Image (cartoon, rainbow, N blue to C red):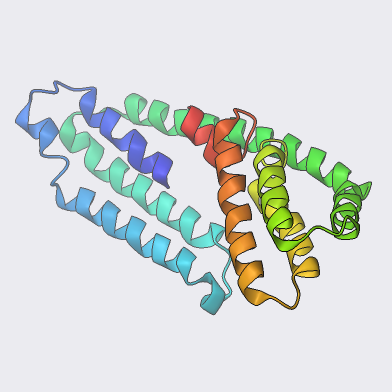
Length: 204
């Protein structure tokens, strides 16, 4: 959906950028409607815990509605059918390339999980007998360097399980260590061009 919003301005920019009609597209009621659709879709994603609806459903519906709105108002700004067609297919091409990359990456992660690589890592850390301070730094450092090759969710789940197994009687430590793991995983992904989807967006 964000892709649809980001591709919309080039449609108007393809015309004379100094023209008032091009600039007025930002304040057009349809543009404001696109913003409302985006916000409502985002709220629906945030309410997943209560609605039990997959995040992909409101996002895909919202993206489709935004593209429909863009297609309706595009001719009034001098955007022909071919330009609009090219913009849509450019977005689909970017999405497809990203999807194929993530498919290959998740296949690699699934192969590691099938061979119990992450389970062995968890057992080694638990058996090492680290104190809370050592475990805090060890899991944070591991999350930083593991997140570029594994997605952030897998990294957080694996190392979070280690923290919960060791610090079972100390909820304060578990909370702080999990926060550290999540921050380190995101920082590690952004550090490397081989990270997750967020990393790809940053590098693009």
